[in-house]
Image 1 (cartoon, helix red, strand yellow):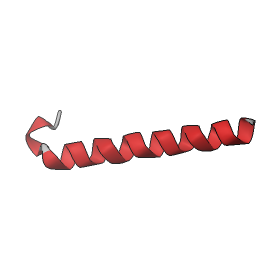
Image 2: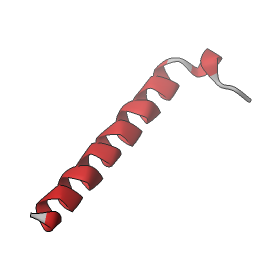
Image 3: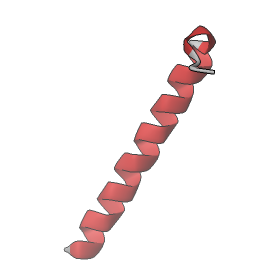
Length: 33
């Protein structure tokens, strides 16, 4: 079960990063820098 949990966590993290990247690309004006 630990392997499944790890895969799920990795997938969730990748999805979050992907969504974050899309959001940043859609709203470039909100860049902190």
